[in-house]
Image (cartoon, rainbow, N blue to C red; front, side, top):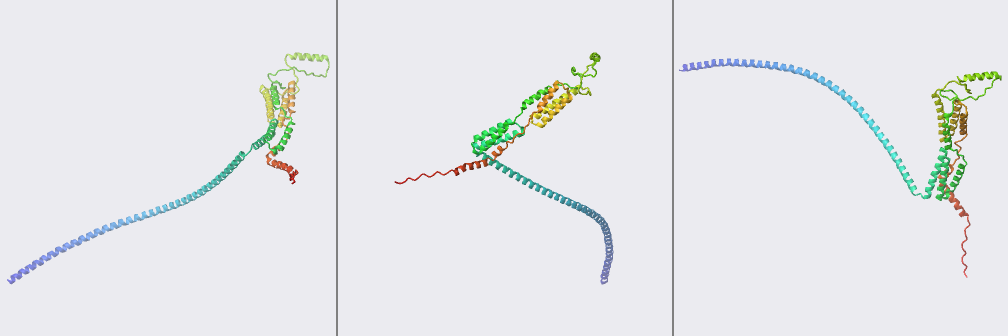
Length: 394
């Protein structure tokens, strides 16, 4: 039994050993398969890691290139930024210069405005003071101011226009104003005005209106003057010239007279004191007459303006033109005689100086002081009246 049990235990142990050997075999195979799988997985993982590393290296290369390009762009941006900064600095400097110029211009304009304002203020104050002085004047002051204005007008009319008549009226009106003012200091001024009026009365004033009318009448006679040069439509005048011949034989005179009578039916024989150079056209005739009218118009203009040099020069020019282009018949001689008569008239005389009365009136305050001194001096030199005697006590 014991052997059977031992045999059984031995079989069981052998079966267990076999079973264990089979289990170890399969375990080894399984471990080997696991190792192979792990190795394959590791190789696959290594391969993937290597591919990823290569990809990552390419990306890094690309990243480096991108970084290089970015650095280039950044450097370009930096250069642009520096250029923009320089332009900005230039603009700021320009703005600063314009700002300074604007501030200077504004300051100059403000100063000019202030100066104009001060000047206007001074003028306004002066005008206000003048108005106040005018309002404070008496009637005598106004009359003296009016007389001063009339004296100024008289000087202007005499020396600028040569109007003696208006000058006398202005002086007389000024004397009337000074008389009405009742100012004792104006007596010397009135005395000088009287002297000025006496000087003006001694001046011979030409009749400008009458001379102008005479020149106008003379201008109407131009169409009656005959030109010595022939022209179409000219009226023929018989010649009264007596020719002296060296030969006094009657036969020759009769022969000559017969020839002249026969030629009289064909041609007209006329005598002229001036050589005939050409035959005038109707336009030239009108031009000659019109030129003479223009010269007489210039004479009238000089007469109205009291311009004696121009008056004399234009009369001489008109006389010369008449003598050169017109026949010296009775009409031309009368025309030239009228021109000589006008030339003998002096339209602008030497006028006297009447400005002393105006100067004296403008310095009326000095005359008032002198008048006051002259009034006070007799009063101071007069003997004082003795006081009345005191009554004597009885």
